[in-house]
Amino acid sequence: MAGIVDFLPNLDVKGIFSGAGQLIKDIRTAITGKEPIDATKAAELSAKLQELDSAIQQGTLAVALAESQSEDKWTSRGRPMFLYVVYIFMLAAIPMGFVAALKPDLAEAVAEGMGAWLKAIPDQMWYLFGAGYLGYGAFRSWDKYKMGK
Image (cartoon, rainbow, N blue to C red; front, top):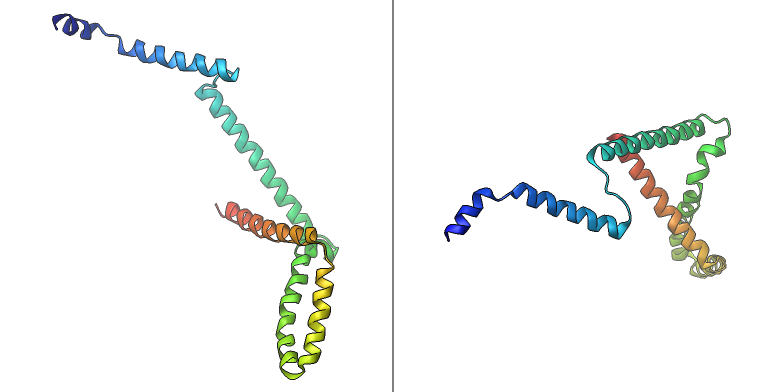
């Protein structure tokens, strides 16, 4: 027991941990083939990333500003236009309800015609629309959230 007590004050804890850290670094380098970056390099990369993110955001704002100031009225309306088409279909259900109440045969014929017309659209177009609708809504929300920060 006396040998252990004599050994403990001379134990180089810092050397053990730095040696273990070096061993982990060597294993990581051997596995990935890349040297880990130090804190200074990480800070430089983070600053560069923020600079690039700022440049992208300024570019996006410049494009949005150019679109809003365009003389062409369709430029500013082009992106949400496909949403208006779907809204028209949704709102068309309201008068169709009245037509169905007053003239069920006419409403059935109109519904069959609309159904046949909508079934003629390929499924891939519906998937594309869904992705565009959700993507547009999500990106606009994310963009507005980022601008509010």
